[in-house]
Image 1 (tube, rainbow, N blue to C red):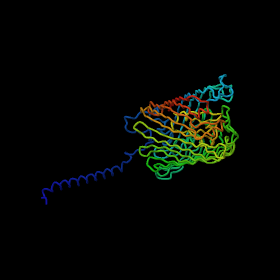
Image 2: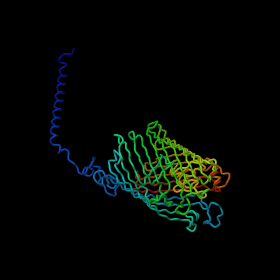
Image 3: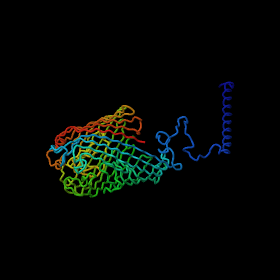
Image 4: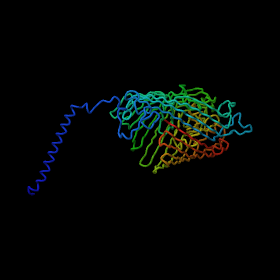
Length: 558
């Protein structure tokens, strides 16, 4: 046992700590009692919580100007324009495109060169297009923590475009118009109202409604539907935003031929319904799975485009107005498993075509599409490998359409805009072998104005790609692809030529994306692509040389 003298310092220390704690409690109680009487000195109402206070750090705050989008600006939604919770966002953009390409072009009934006797004539093309966009967005609510209460969006676009070709019959059905064309068009890409209907949980899971012209992409890569069009959409979230869903009905608007913008409320005679469901962290954290249903009801109609060419029905076989009812069931996914990034899609389509022009009879639809991309990131580089398959029709005159076709696809896949096959439309006897911004050799008259055609050759595509962030401002993409028709029976029936072999060609391209300000206010894009034909393309186009394209785009945004 320790002597009493050894325990004395410990007792003194305990008494000191006890006294200090009591003094602290008394001081706190006194402060609370004092504060209760003069609360107005500490809490004063502010008529404008946005403009009457300056957030710290005070030395970094810069007075905003209406023309400065980088600092506090009432035109960019940093301050309310009405009350305390109603904001406006103004966006202006100029998208300037210049494209030169070499693609097979029919010489037509009146060639530019009087001594031209071959079926395909001069193939060079120059295309210039400027989109001038002005967007206005009004919304109410605190969107940082909960859905907006309501929103109004208006996005108007004015297009000026010019094309020069090597033949007289490409810019207009009237050969006297020559080989050049200038055109303008004004349309709305967004004109919608959104209303937050109600919350379904205390985690701000919600249900909202948006009606009007609006953008919608039905899957991660835009394989089946991606467009700005008229629609009514119900959307929301569940399970703390782990599940997202969409239900949208689109009574489609007609498109302008040359600008590809919406016309001003002209009916397309086509209804599209889409339902999809996204589930995050499905199977593995970081991987999102999506399940979808599409219905495309394309009604019988007759349409000539703005240049006088018939687009509905297509000039292929039995050209009579007909109805297409197509139902798509799909499963897609996007995410990563460890270091392995994966993106995939599979679609099954069934339904009926009331009178397929190539088959010359009604056909039942039974077609499929599959795609997969696998990539690995290594510091500032990404190495990619991908494959795409759309089923082809083995017997074009039977009762089944087995060639897959989309509704309105714009796939970002296997090189995308830096691929010749994807970025350039290749024409064949009044229809498209492949449409611009598509992968499917569908033999339809037009992607934006024609009807889906499920009697087509189908496609096999294998791609290797490489992406590199060589600078914070500069991204480079390299791609090479091998393309092959799944079956050529529909091509042989269409062009009345046998045999047509399966190999299409080798597609390769390089693309540069430069953002000198490290944001999206100034973007410069340059892409160069080429397609070296193999046996199948040579059979169709009289042994064309290498096809190429060069595209540059300058996008300025405020």
